Length: 491
Image 1: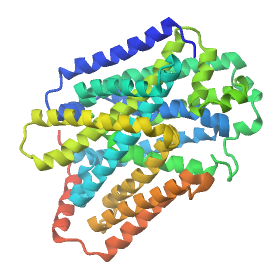
Image 2: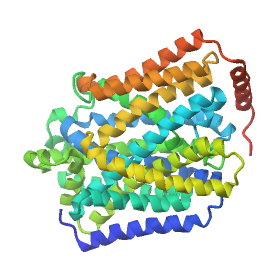
Image 3: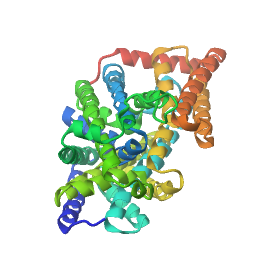
Image 4: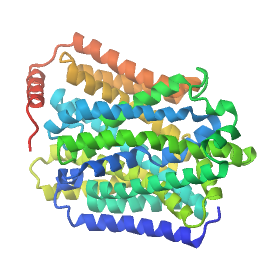
């Protein structure tokens, strides 16, 4: 693609500014809690912006137009998973805040035992580092590689280094501050793109009338790849994403108060709806503006960027592609910070419980480097495993749904015990992985994978819990867990 010096300058200045934020924030980080939770100091707008920036990453902003071009606009129903934000704000966030957790995995040791916590930490570390950090780094690098005609592997490494530097320096605070900036850029980029698309087609009605009617079917036939099974699966995947993942909930734990956390998450849910609508516009426009033979020869992820290269003037191209890069960096930095916090809190602190906060900070930063290297290696492999969108969605279905089931059962069914939770986690994760990797679900693969991991984890957990008696130590721990939930939040 041809791109002007002005547009290049805008993107370079943005990346330099991102690194400066990491350096500036690093001066305020004095201990592990500052690094992992930002000193629990974030307000509602910052939380909403960082939730929104992380949720609508490059895999979403770049991936959806290609899906719309090939399968129609029914993917817009992904906005339904914002319903999970309401449940998170009303039911779950108050519980997490009362328990004063640093990582989400702590709930599993308090409610069950250390075995469950350890397994979930490992699952999250793999999912956050390899899948979310690796895949989104890859997605951002694809854009840069095509814009500047640089080998993809070089851009992947360069992008990962940028994410590593500002996350290493400032931890969650630098992640949230840069996320706020990235969120604003994402909104500006999408809004500008939508305005120019409407200008090209004479508004929404002109755009709709220019494309085949079947493309605009909001509810396609059951046998359609994006039919109701897919829509239901996408909605369900929002619940573990917004309610139980370390990746997202680390922000809620870092809020000033429980009410700030609630409002931040609710605002993120509201924001998700217009963003989901704006993201489908380039896919619709591409059906008219791009030659089918050209689209067939490119990655589906390039449909949206190609449209905006055609429509936007010099200067605005730089802003839009900075927004795309920002989207990828936002998710990559979140995953990197989450995985380093998990390893430090759940493993190193267990091994060395009496170290100073400054020591834990050093360890967390060292782990950040190691995780960035592993995530970069995974990013280099993404093209060989089916692309960004496929990798993200399937891993959420395989790993996050069983964890969500264990949290819900643990909070609302006292009969559930650690052995049942451990058995359910293993069964659900393995079952979902088998369905996904063998292609058993066929055209509705995501829906079948989601249903398998959810149902297996639920059924096995309940059966084993009722068949195996809870240990006395676990009984005592569970009683203390529910006593803490009943108490007001500590200030």
